[in-house]
Image (cartoon, rainbow, N blue to C red; front, side, top):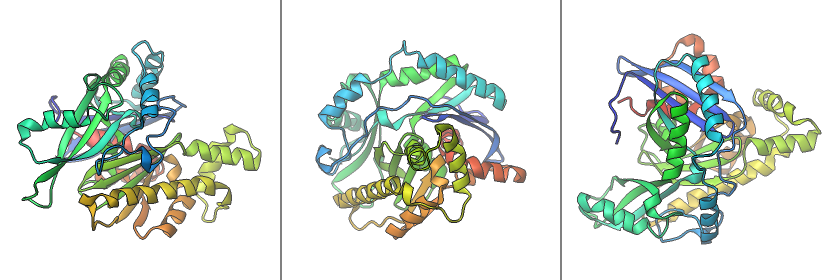
Length: 377
């Protein structure tokens, strides 16, 4: 859906709660080759304080996705960044320094939008002509959006149907506040970049971790501030849920149980990730919460009439904290689906000598890799 011409160098930039990550890929013999990458670790205030959804009663509509209740809609509207936000200067400075250190060769880039601001839903509609679809979709979601539709940038695409004679159709809808798009555009422009696209983390993760696999998959992105749950089906991210549990929750448990200073938590987490046997009891409050969300997300998805008979095949873990072994072990105990830590570099080419380094940082780079791959055919 890009309106911009493609080049041979592709840059993906992910501005997350724990810093900025970027990956530059070059198209070599038709394949994406890792050219350079970079990470700057710093706590960034990019997310809304509330989760997307908590209880089934907060879901609006029938069989059509997950939306915010009215109380959270008001909070969402109030918390949107504005163009005079000082974070624009701060984030653009961090990004500009990282671009220089990584020796990035292109100024054309694709960036991500934080999922906590994004409206995401699957609509089931009567089948209509393509020329009428935009009008029908906007009329249907108008009452569901957290802001007036005139203030939202709406993108939609039809979901392939298994029944060519079906009288209805499913449409994947994503919407972002225009002021949020302007906010992130300003960050990239001040850093000296020409923004080609802004897209949600869901599509970037699908591209780097799932690829052409049409199976029903859940990607669990355990970030610094929150954990996001994406169900991907037929190669499209169908649902998204988010909870405010992640790496910082693990930090809090370490500080409370071991009586250590906050500065030590990062190193302890790295050490734990390399251990074969981990005293995991202190971490179970976070692990159990994530397991419950995986279970609830699958149950909600499979209860929709269009998903009857589908079976989840994989649970892919990503995010910096996902490498702590107890996450994979405990999740695998609860579900029959295969559980593994995703390898976002699997669809790229790189020098053999980089493998260990790239494997170590891979879980943190999945979004930026997916963004960089976006325009490589």
